[in-house]
Length: 132
Length: 132
DNA sequence: CCGCATCCAATATGATACTG
DNA sequence: CAGTATCATATTGGATGCGG
Image (tube, rainbow over all chains, first blue to last red; front, top):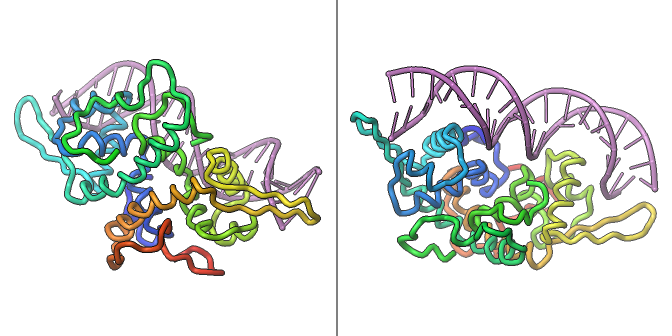
């Protein structure tokens, strides 16, 4: 899912959307950024398990796809803040039904592993309920 | 995205759903099966570009995940028909907003009227490959 | 007709160390 | 702090041929 926007490469809208959110951690990044602004290290902690390299790579792709805004402050020490663009907010909204489906029919119907609570894993206080 | 239901592997519902639809051709398969029953060769023609191996593999995974129903007729020559399960229909419906997003914001085509076909990503051209 | 088996190429991700 | 560079590994997907 290198960089997206390959004109004519898509068979339908979902195909195109899948290319944007296809990275292993991208939906989690979107979720983490929903309604908040994050610095790099902050994001890294929120999206637990992702490495610096992959997080940076995914963020760059999301930025190129117009989903994420990257604001660089010329300070010492350096500060960079990530946030969703309006397009990213729309995408997040479009993902909500899919998330509800997954929560109800995949997670809800499957046995859960010990110690890895599904619902509470993500330590992100949701500002607004995303109907998930 | 081998077979799903990997206990403890999901951070949220979307993460789980992504595991189900993560294959390169899976959403196109879902699209092709939306509201119709297909034989293997038929599907192969509809999802143009997919190889037999990958199509069979994806179908097996979708079947294991309860998305696709596989009906085998003990005939000669063999006949197998694929269709969506009720769960697959729900998934297809949950994918619709994402498809609309992709169509509108990635592909950049004309905006679609809201409330299109239930469970459809896109109108299905009958008897024609899914390439646009 | 409907697949599976094998081998191989491409890509995505992970670990670790290093830099402005 | 916010990344890059490099190497290693894991996962997919594609090509081709065989089998029930």
